[in-house]
Length: 264
Image 1 (cartoon, rainbow, N blue to C red):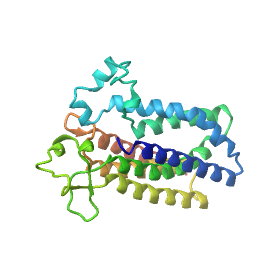
Image 2 (image 1 turned 60 degrees about the vertical axis):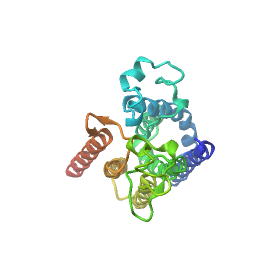
Image 3 (image 1 turned 135 degrees about the vertical axis):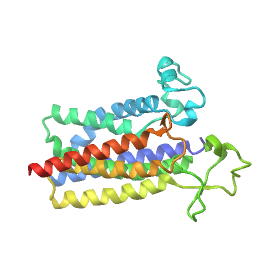
Image 4 (image 1 turned 90 degrees about the horizontal axis):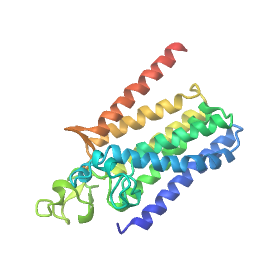
């Protein structure tokens, strides 16, 4: 896509800001900020692998329509042009990146005998900041948008980024069809989430590890709602797969929080 260099620059900025924030918060808890940068050597490859595997397991509708289903991507995994390994052709999932990077971070903290709960609480604040900035890269590339809207803040989407029925330029003309900027909605909401998490963390009113659960509950709740607006989503039959996954995460996080509260 034409915005690829800008896309990469925004993603790099998002990663740096998230890590810099985590390093500064760690210092406020008398933890060595060097662990943030060292852990990145573990997290980066795991996050990339996780992001690609998520795409392979949950390809969006536009990819499935070309015949590149999950089974095809796995069967042709080492096809360097379109197979599962061909991450340079595009196709990464943020949930997979978070899971892969989070697992690597947890292993790093355990290996270096760091307080895992404290570090994870710090990490989700940095993660929310990184996600806030990173979503603007989707805006540059015309990705992560929703159904057409007549609201004044709708955005135009170029022909190359159109998918499904919205590729019909007769029904949906380029100059007059505006779409929900779902990427912007998510950026604003994750920005508010980052601020709220930081405020709670600064006051120290929650039990260690609870901030992670609140992040999962609130972020997945936001995504569950926004996925209903998005086009080009992964599906299980007629179900929006991401809405199902996010809904389950919300229920699980809420259940653990309630159980921890009862124990206290």
